[in-house]
Length: 346
Ligand code: ADP
Ligand code: MG
Image 1: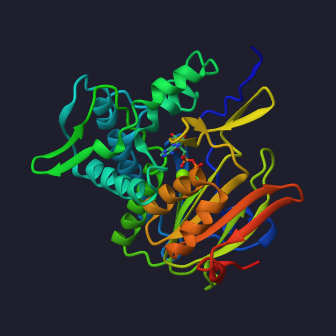
Image 2: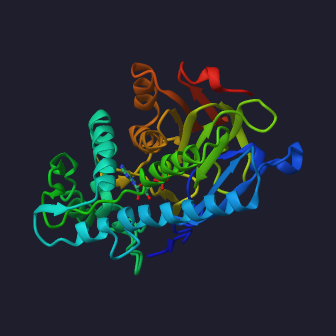
Image 3: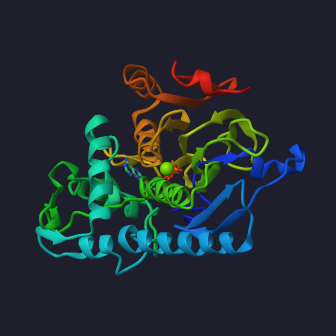
């Protein structure tokens, strides 16, 4: 079998929106405020703001952010064998599992998007993600057979995952249910870092993890933060659209960073739970604006699964601000939902 697998493996593999002030600074020659950045969740994070730049305050913010990210990873990562989520996945029987309120909150948010997208967003897609070589269990990838896909698909069960507050716990419907929060945890962490900056009484900031972004107030020159949406091409980086972001979050999902090719066909890390296969339409990226980064992140994946027509219809029916980029014979084509147009600068 000729298998051409690109092991981009979760490092800088997210489809991406990025802050123009950060990435195009060489061209724009704009001044930067204080910044904190580092690695997390198999990608990078950054926080920038303007205002007080005392090094002692920057140091406190960095320490608090790193601590917060460690806590979130220790709850939600499938790459950490003893994270709370990994222990839940490893529980070898159905039944209730004692869990932290934060993990329960993210599961509840995920449930709401699964329900609204009629299962296009499905955190129990983990066995399929692993089968297709995009999960924590990467060793010895072999292109899956139709039978293997069918068997992994049988474990999908988002509707039967329940949470309760007293005592704080999650119900595991079957031993082989495996939850993967990769499509929502980065957004949640961005919201948490934004809250952290609020706690430091910073009014104007931009927080980003792997291209999921929240911006508050204004950028240094007094105008809205400007966010670039990438052209969804497999190699290189260029800006396809520029969005003005004020007190909102933006997330992009796409098929162009984390993928492999097999017998002339591309397979990306977004799985359609209805087929069990990586999505196979011409919708290359979806960008969603929302008050919540958690929900923007999850919606971007859900709409990417739904495909160009359903994604557009859903955005219009639900008044969501969405930019869809499709691959057409004439090149990349952008489609904006009505609500999105007001945010586009170019
Ligand atoms: P993107 O930048 O494309 O949104 P993310 O890392 O945020 O990338 O989300 C993609 C990840 O979500 C996949 O690697 C996989 O772990 C998970 N995933 C894939 N398909 C689905 C789905 N239908 N519902 C929920 N999560 C999914
Ligand atoms: Mg995402």
